[in-house]
Length: 576
Image (cartoon, rainbow, N blue to C red):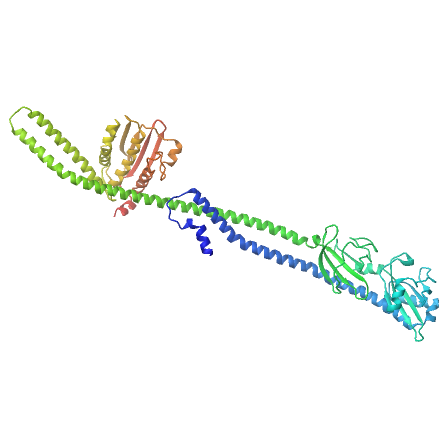
């Protein structure tokens, strides 16, 4: 299927159509450039896309993994902090009796030991079964407070243990309460209640050593901040971030806060409390290196695309120009062969016609000569001179016809390439004879200024005839009736001879002169093939010569041909 698509879209590469259209090459160039662009850019785009995705995933993992590990460690630290304080309160509740703890001196001694061994305790109180605080040690005056109507009191009576969220309470300061219920063998119930300073949480979180711009904080399951947040408010304010799904293992999820900032949000729930620890890391800061690298890669990629298009376009243009030139040369060669074959056919036809005419001409000539001789032997009679004049006219006509058939035979014999020694003046006289009749009919003066001392040259007579004939034909076409054509020869130097054909015709413009030897260029709209001068140029080159033209509009043109005295080796080889 791909082969069919390629063949259908690039059939111009397979066609042998001789028509050489610029639009065809423009279309072909666009297709080749498009194909090369697809073939080269598609793998590049795929590789860029894969590398982009893989590198982005790697960068995300490199950012997320440390954040997940750090949050997990912090969650464990806070969990251990609460577990140690809870165990301490539970141990004291089990180790001492209600009477011992009711004595504030004993309670104070125990509290001092607690604060010495464990940081964070603010106060310690004993609450009876009715919810009255019977003894208290701490910075506040809370002895005698009634907690029977508060939720935490009911929960600790049901669960035996209670760890609160951060709240203000009677102290009007953020704190956390740990309450442990004790039930004696006699069924007596009382509660030991300790208060923790929440600044311990801040100390643990600050020890995480987060990067600038990042934030970590505690919230409860109602979304209320339990510690202050650098990004989202103070303690006991509502956190604007939604709570993520419950997970007791540290997780990292992408999130967007209300200000539109994209984040890596790491979180973990505490198993024994309503607390959730969260850490937010803005993506912009975390992926700065990636964004910088992405910009560099994009620049390199675009530069590569531009370079590929530039190189493909240039090379395709060069290749197509070479292809067009080759096709033009092929078409020219084909037309030259066709033209040569046509001339060869004409030559053979002319030879046949000449042979057929020569025989009756010979008879006419013989008979006319006999008549002339008989008239010479006869005595004078009336009309003898008139008969003699007529016989002479017949003989002259026969001589003229013989000259024509002789030239036709000479032309026919020399259609094939044949290097021989020749006199260029004779070739010019012979060839100009073909056009003498037309020149005479149009009253055109065809002057031959031939150097009698002209050197003999080695060349091809038939091809030189064709060259001279082409230039003379163009001169006749360029001049009006009663015009002037002058053919001149001279010795250029010891190794070259010169030939010029000058007319006083309409001349040519500079633009026409630039294209005069190009194939199929013609100013004879609908009357010429545009091959005459291009063939002339090719023949002169093959014979080792040079041809040039000088022209001026409304003044005339002069074609100058220089030929070597000795045939070049290439022409000699071609003639063999």
